Image (cartoon, rainbow, N blue to C red):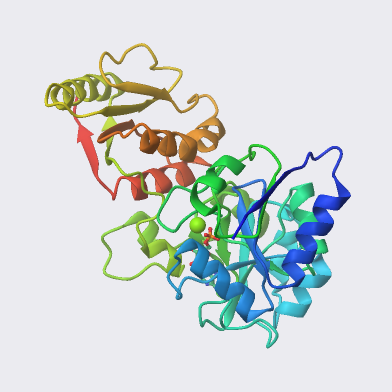
Length: 351
Ligand code: AMP
Ligand code: MG
């Protein structure tokens, strides 16, 4: 299959590109497009066969349900059985935005979209191109991250092309994304609602609006015997090809330890990558240092995370050593993705 790639800009959207994308989606095809979180791989969510193509193109396990993207509140009623009062309050504040909510599904949503579950995950993205494509495609677009399953999520059209060129009908290139990590997932079928995946809409932000919010404990205790409540969270996601270690503790000791380990692996002939920050750049002596952002603003760290992991892949890096981050605010999304990338390999260094 030849993948059509078209650039589009948010200020001056090319109507022909949107029309083409909409036609492909309505006919049951696959179109990758930008959202504010990461690039999504879209298909008509109400067409089971179309949704099935997403699994094939990504190599995604069939029990991993898809998020349905909508562009207006009326659409929510059609695909859900009930919408709890709290969800309405939360939607008013955070939609459109980087938040997915889970509801009981209506009959019209095929089990092929929900991975066999009787619930459906729904999000309204805050991105003009995404909204236009959702409307053009019929209003209900299943769109998981547009990467090969297991690879870091795509934050640019080039990343999508690397993974899916030749396997999907079209890529709409709207430039780099804004946030860089996937949406927060909030289960509204339980009360208090529960976070199943941390993202840019944080527990603190939700609690200040509607009171207590629980967090799936498997996100905090990765060795828990219980499986995560979001089926997708059990897979070793977001993984670079290199073996990755996160070092936690006093920052001077972390730098010292990373320098020691990097020197050792380099001497053995391995390619070493280091993930540090603006605050620590210049303090690493061996290895390929990449600056992930500044600790003054951890949103910058979220924005660069997946791109850096992909760069290390293309550099043929064997070992990655990374600083760790706080778990407040968006830091919890950053640490969740970093820990998964490292297969939960974390070293605590003492003073
Ligand atoms: P992605 O779109 O690739 O970021 O992945 C979607 C995530 O949402 C996966 O971790 C899924 O397991 C999760 N998800 C989607 N639908 C549901 C649902 N009905 N219940 C629980 N988790 C869901
Ligand atoms: Mg994904």
